[in-house]
Image (tube, rainbow, N blue to C red; front, side, top):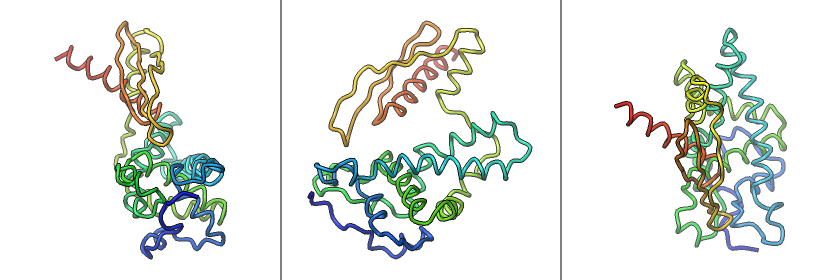
Length: 235
């Protein structure tokens, strides 16, 4: 087994923010275990990746339910834009920071010294895993209680649904009958627990690149670079 620090968070404040006492503490421990700290022989089972997969779906369901209640007259397209921001990695990372999740993560000391504990994507993934663990241990109500306690500020922050860079680029090209932007993976490097992706996007006869620690983040960066070029041309 790897040297990864405490199996469970010691902070009472962190536990109180969850609003749930775990019947199976092992689920909480797994949710807080980064893959770099998992037993190499059982990495997919011991790390938080499977719980992250589940938590992503639970968060989307609970948030869609909440948005439908909060904005009963809003159209599906606008609700979808709100949802995409509320479940985005940036929002998840902010929630994780707010509840003190980084300090509770199980990460090997060597990786901790590289700043892995504070990386937004690592915190976002662990927040999703935590939601998955709450769902498995306490059902949908436990997950819903946590989400509704931690997301109100984001839900009410802006009543004008924002758009991601990818959505804005797609809207731009479709509005000019140029078709959909085409994304392609240029490269993927780095260790499995600290990857670096480079993605290119081609739209309107122009191509830009972006990089990030996930393909999704790299796609967003590429779209942002494309839109930045458009703005500089127009100015």
